[in-house]
Amino acid sequence: MSDLKNMTVIQLKAYAEENGIDLKNAKTKTNILAELSSISANISFVEEDPSVIGSSTIVKEKRTPKSVTKSDEVGVVTTTSADNFKNKVFEKAKNTDGLKVAIYSEKNMHWVSVGRISKGYNIVSEEASEKWLSRKSVRKATPQEVATYYGL
Image (cartoon, rainbow, N blue to C red; front, side, top):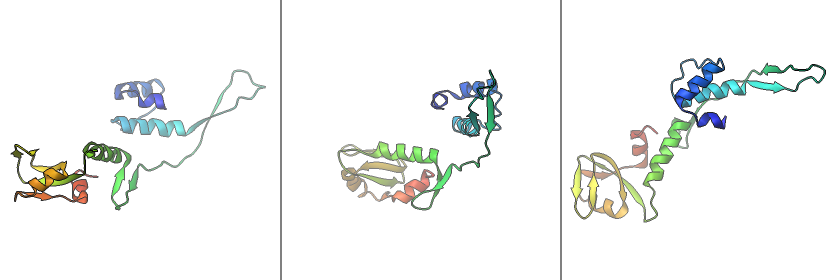
């Protein structure tokens, strides 16, 4: 299965076609991998009977599909791919220099000694946030507000 994760969408589709696997309506890599993993999870190989030479038996087991959705600590329903995106967004905002603050700006702004912010949500250092918050078109944003905006 780890080899499949390293394949591109085109390679995965070719692999499925070669092995006679119906991908249904799966178009994205995540959906294709989900289809392939559910098929491979339903197949198990049984030991060969030593009295019969050259035979192998494939037994399909019935298995209930596992849901990819889950509820996070706040009660928001999310998926594994959304969690990965959320982790990347917040990991990018982390910095060892100090704390980061989310702010919302009503317009694009540039301040020579502070930096630049765009209209919408921005992640800035705590020092820069103190300066930006002195502007009337900038306000502090809550973590829930930022998560909702990004669909997390």
